[in-house]
Amino acid sequence: MNRTDRLYALVEELRAVSPRPRSARWLATRFEVSVRTVERDIGALQQSGVPVYAETGRTGGYCLDKAHTMPPVNLTPAEAVAMALALRHLDGTPFRAEGRSALHKLAAAMRHEDAAMARDLATCVHLLGDGPIPPMPHVLGIRRVLRIRYADRGGTITRREIEPLGYVGKPEHWYLVAWCRLRGAIRAFRTDRIASFTATAEVPPLRRLRPEDLDIPSGDAVPLDLAG
Image (tube, rainbow, N blue to C red; front, side, top):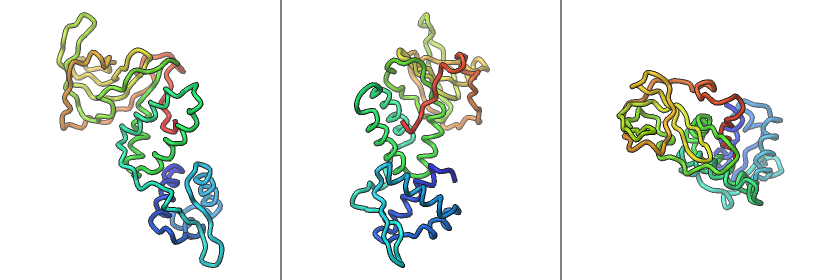
């Protein structure tokens, strides 16, 4: 279990037994880490604003104040990524730090499976340029074979089946990077030229999107950070 998943699991464990405490030793055994690691994790949660406090005494330990925490949030992975993208519009404003803090709290409150899927989806999103990005395309986050009608530069429509691999956002346009079954190769589709799309029930085979597949000079495309 990585640290992000463990922080989420710590919050859920303390929420489940609140207002009763859990000792650091009990939590260390539960998550198969040292007591020192638990204490560092609790400190990180407190610094991020999670209302965890310590009760002293023989039966003491760490408690979570339920009155000041949110229940599990039913954000979808795509919604979490959308929020991370929205934070890009706060760059240069006084609210950038507050926006990052809010996203961190929401991500920590998501279900473990959804949070993991959101992080996985975020790694498929790359941003180019420092300017504002256009609205997020509807196809973002769909992990199925898509049937699309696509218009080329001249307006000619072709019908294709594609396997989505990743997304590149520029200040002017979004591109869906996918394996095109018509061409038998990776292609980048400008999302505003996708005239229509249908998500099939077919789950495509796993293909990893490599940096060289994006055909972008190294260092120019910045992966999306779900932490804001």
